[in-house]
Image 1 (cartoon, rainbow, N blue to C red):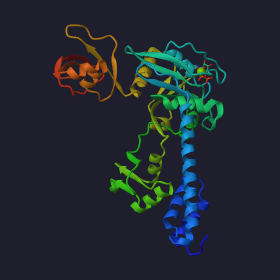
Image 2: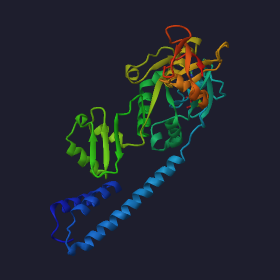
Image 3: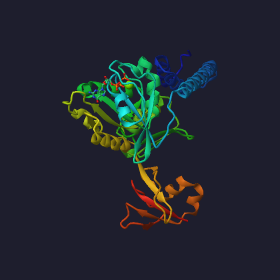
Image 4: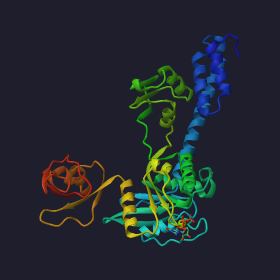
Length: 379
Ligand SMILES: Nc1nc2c(ncn2[C@@H]2O[C@H](COP(=O)(O)OP(=O)(O)OP(=O)(O)O)[C@@H](O)[C@H]2O)c(=O)[nH]1
Ligand SMILES: [Mg+2]
């Protein structure tokens, strides 16, 4: 090494030597490149740094490709109906019994662990709409680290529209904490909202921050933090108070967020729902699978999907028997689009029964429909 290097260069070189990940190495090398001596005698040094940068960039690309390949190989269950809810639980918690009580699925219910070895699927009728329920093989401590076909099971969970945690009510808190921990390790978060933070690569040089007032650290520190991770040209857009924990969350592209509820299966009829669970998600206690319990359960499962059921009708005819399911917040125009694209182009107005002040009230295209509305479209 030439002796006449700057302090900055020496520091960058130290960072390079201590770097553990490829990203950290790249960041350090880029810094070394920036502070490398510019005189002729350091030509070899500069060439060496460039060569290393090239190699590391190639390695990072390969790593990225490999990651994509393994994600592509992930398992899933083909979705059907208006939404897919996955039943997740520890062995023997009562998942199959729940699936059987709510659907026509033919599954084995037995008192030994891992009775269900393959995903079991059933369709649940909810007000003539079909919701798909999928029981996955049980989760245990260590599933996220590869035990009990964990990766396969967790990749189905990752792909679900919503989650029902099925817990043995007499051991609910323990099972709840194991499941939450395993899902968290697999970057699946339940009933949490995604931070309103965006960090994206930018074509411009440097780090720009929109919404700087939300930063809970000096901008310079954030810049250093991002550069340490090899992020030199990025734009950061903030819409809520932001600390380092949230920056890490925003940088973790594998995180997925799911709505969830807990079903506590009370085999002896004396359990209650622990407060710790109630704080995190809606929780229902099942004792006998009575008609009332089943109705309540179906409604709670439907609510996880964040959709409204809308019944269309033609003038002078009865409403369609089967509802359309649309995301909460959908408009009359969305209803038309769902039926036929041509329809939405020609659409003039609609009449709505249900959420309007008067039955059959005329509404415009941007009217937001509510659950159970009956809609008549006019072109
Ligand atoms: N009393 C009572 N027993 C239940 C209930 N639900 C399940 N069980 C019993 O609990 C045991 C396990 O039930 P399963 O539904 O097979 O449990 P599972 O979660 O599907 O189990 P694995 O597929 O092995 O993970 C069986 O012996 C069931 O009879 C319930 O609501 N009440
Ligand atoms: Mg089972």
